[in-house]
Image (cartoon, rainbow, N blue to C red):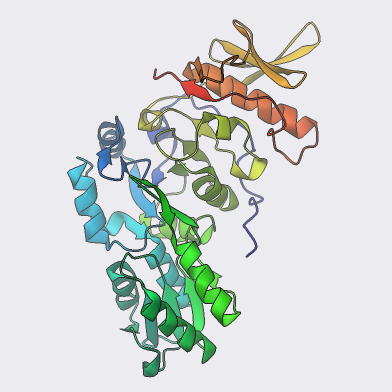
Length: 366
């Protein structure tokens, strides 16, 4: 399927600054869950304190997730286990996004075959649809979302219905699902099985498509949204396509090297190690010319590209002779990112800095 492009109203594809904490500069946070608010069964350091502090500061919160298996109250319970305050009305899942999309294509009250779990069924029922697990009931649509109970028999029911003329809607196209053991099959991989058998491409919701953000924002209220996520190719592609600035955190999938090498369509507007970035100001990047050389200064750190390498003003070239991670502080990380992005854009490399020599980077917590 065609991936989304950045909106004409998107923030510039570089870092922004904010003299105010982000939770007061923006009035609603569209927060990803896994890798941001929690990490599987593990807690994410600083998540609870800062999400709750943002709420206390008056920020509206919307928990926006590609996980279609959980009903809103299940998400609230999971957040509560991590000491994060939330209400069911603040949850917007890919299942809810797909159900909302479906209302634009089929009549209210129509029969829909669910290839998924309780989260998808509940979202469809809430929109007034009837649900079934059998193609023999004549469904007008198939909505497919990840659930561990999805098996060959249920996938086949989806194929039967689609081949009989039903519309295919996927809650998201994530190829993989992070687990404690590594990456497992995601909904996109199971969608591909049905597409391979039916020969028909689905309508797709969830991230990285912008609709999940615009629909979540409509429910949450607010006029100055900020997306918060850990995955560049879903959270931040979707946010940028929706014209919404994003805060990237390093507690999930995409690491510091990924960020520095990111193409323009994936670039966040703000960087931090974790959700402390939600309640903190962010220094403005400043372009500085010294002896004809361009440096980017963030806070009291400066970086540039020299040849094919990144360089910090205080410590020289950012290299690792033994392939170990280079340890830098937060403002050095920000300066390196904006320097790399500026270089890539100036070189006409379609906004991608991947041709630079960038080692693995560990950002030291502030």
